[in-house]
Length: 528
Image (tube, rainbow, N blue to C red):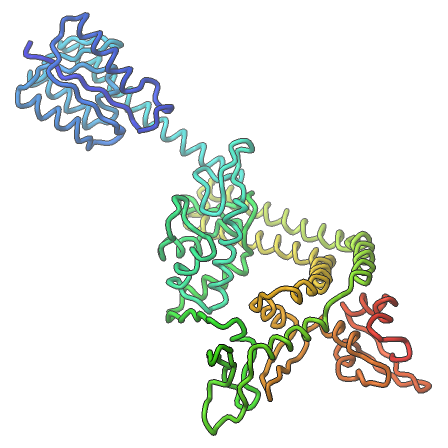
C-alpha cells in the first residue's frame, strides 16, 4: 500500500444539524486506521453538501489519487464521499482503472472485487435516493404548509418566526416602518433613493443592522406577503398571517412603481416655523433669516413686488399659542365627554353583524370556486398556467372581500377611535403651551387648521373639523356673532319666533349635546 487519504465531510456549518461532527469523524477514523495498520498520508476536511457535483476539496483529492499519490480512501460511510451520480461514478471508475485500490469504512464493508463494486454502487445509489427523497419530502411539506396558509421558510422582513406558535407573526418593532415605507411611496412624494435615505432616519435597518439598499426596498414594496398573499415557486396562496398593509395601498404602490419618477429633494429647515404658512399677498412660500440675534420670517418674493413686512419669531409663537388655546379642552369637560364616549361604544356594533354574515357567505362561495378550480387542474381540464392565473385572481377577490368586511365594521364603529383621539388631542393641547418645542406647536396648528397665510404680521387660517366646534364654542361671547363657524358645523337652519334653530352634524352633535361644554364655551341655548 502506498497510503491512504482520510476524508471527513459534513453538509453545513451548523453543528446541531449533523449526526456526526467533523471532530468525531476524525477521531473515529484515526482510531480505525491505527487498528487496521493503515498509513494516512493526508487528511481532507470539507464542509459542503454532496448533493451536487463541484466540491473543490473532494475534486482535489480525486486528482491527487489519479496522479498516484495515494491508492486508498478512509471515510466514515460511502455517503460521505458521494450523494450524486457524478461523484459516485468517478469513484467507481477509479476502482475500475486500478488507480484506486482500497476504500475503508468503519461502518461499511468493501473489497475491490466485482461484488464489492456492485455493493458500492448500491450504497452510492441509496445515498442519492435518500437525498432525492428527502428533498421531495421537504417540498411536499412546504406545499402542504402553503395550502394551510403557513409560510414554510424564513419570515420576510417585518415578520418573525414564532417557534412556540409555529407560525409567522408580525414584528412589532419593524412592521410600523414597513407600513411607513408603503405609505411614503404611495404619497408620490419620495423616490426609492430617498426612501433609502429616510429609512435609517426612521430607525429601519436590515436584520444585520445595515442600511437597506434600493433593491431591498423595491423587493419589500413588490412583495404581496404584506397584504396577506404568499407567492412561493411562482404560485400564490392565501396566508393566515396578519397583514401589515391593505391591498389597496399595495396596488397604489405598484402603479407608482410602474411609472418613471424623478428624485425629489428632501427639504431640511433650520427654522422651526418654516412650512406653517404662505404669503397672504402673493402666495409665495415664507422663509426665515437670522438678523441681530433674532429670527425674522418673510415672503421669499423680495423687493417691490411684495409689501408684506418681516415678522419676528416671538410674535408668531405668541399667535401659535393663542391658536392652541382656542381648542384646548378642560379636564372636567374631557372627563364628561369621555364617559359619554364609553356609553356610545358599548351600544354600537350590533346591526353590522347581519351584513358581515352576508359577506362571509360570499367568502365561502369564493372558497368553493377555488376548490373546484383545483379539481379541474388535478383532472387535467386546465393547464398549470391557467390554474395559477385564475387562482391568483380568486385569492385577490377573497382578500378584497375581507377588506370590505373590515370597512363595514369600521363604518359602524370606526368613528369611535377618531373621536377619542380628537378628545385626547384637545385635552393634551394644554401641554404644548407649557413647552418650548416650536416644531410640535407648528405641527399641531397645521393639524387643527388649513390654508395658513401670513398677512400684516399675523397668521390667518381656517379651522378644520372637528376643531372648528371647539374654537367656536370657546370664542363665542354674548352679543357676538358666531354665524360663520356655526354654519360649518350644522345644517337645516331655521328662524322661528325670533330664535335660530339648526341640527348639529356629526361629530359635533356628540359634543354639542353635552350641556356642560356649551356653558363652558359660552354657547348657551339663547345663542342657538
